[in-house]
Image 1 (cartoon, rainbow, N blue to C red):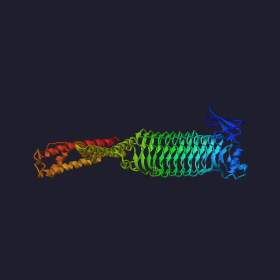
Image 2 (cartoon, one colour):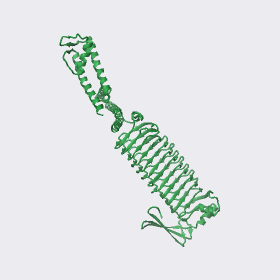
Image 3 (spheres, one colour):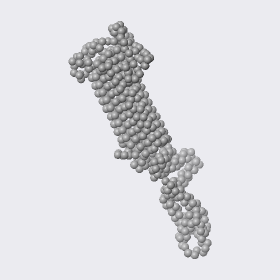
Length: 556
């Protein structure tokens, strides 16, 4: 009986059966597949005596069990019958068991088997009841488990070694309590678990080793409580986890190693369990989680290293720990964040060169330090990113800092936002050419002088105050110098009772003009009149600018 809803019922007929390839058996096994009270299918299989299979092993003959029913097949029992050592390696030549049915309440055992002379084939077979053991098995060529169904308590491939051939588990059904590939060596061939359904099995690939072949779990499905890929060495081939549904179990890739191959988790679905990718070395290739969905459980890349980690268009539902050890580019563009994204260093420093958050939708909070994380460089250092995109990203940082009460960092992010916005407008004007280009240059120069240099876009009241002093002194010097070249004079309307010198009159007139006091005891004459009008406008503007910047600081 299976762990879920599939049942198999086996009956026998003492009648011979001839299979399509001409093989004949004295007994017939009828295997019925049931789901609940409904019979799904029924097939007739040859039912060889297990002793005849053991005799073929003795003689070193090829073994063909295609379309056969095997009851209690066990190499452990074979060793005991032949009085061999428990760890004796048993050679299985050109082993074929396609469309076979293996059943045993005590356990089907291929432990320490050595599959030689051509590929081993278990495709479309069923393993039912008990435990199945391929522990310490070896295969120097390909081994095919495509579309095999495992309805077991435990499936064990621990310490198995697969040398050069491909290992295929595509479209398998793993309806087990535990699926164990611990310390399995997958060799040079490609390994495929494409569209495999692991049901509610707890899967453990801890310490498994892949060499140069590609590894694919494309469209596989996991629904178990625990999925363990800790300390797996994925070798130099591609690692594909695209469109995998990891269910709500806890998932761990901690301390796994990826060499040079591409790693893809694109459009994978991670449920509400914990997802940990801590202390991983992802190698020089891009790691893609684009379009993936992460449930409410924690997602952690703490202390990992990568070159390019992309989670574009993702949905991040839980706390996300991006306190990485070392990373070149992290791309979270256009993702939706419902909880916390954490970049702030804790016990160890966070080294990240570039962070892309264009179009990021923050429903939660972003914890990042302007200084420790070097937030300006994270965005400014982006390659192949438009100036307007960088401006939008700084604006998002500004909003995040405001939300977290980091007002000094908010001001710095706002200044960066406005500067890149100005550069984007200038670049757009130059691209259009003609009058628009000249207009863009003029506006950029005016904004650079008036808004940026004078007061950092109203974020620095002391800078505005200093700018006011500079402007006042600048016009004073003009009032001193201008009379030397043109008709220009500061005239006293009361007869100059204090006998002020030119310098004193110039600074006094500049002050009452700048602050729009207008006592009337001194007034401009000649060309100084238009200059005084300009200074009066500058004074009104800068005093308003100072008021805005000062009040903004006080209110926060």
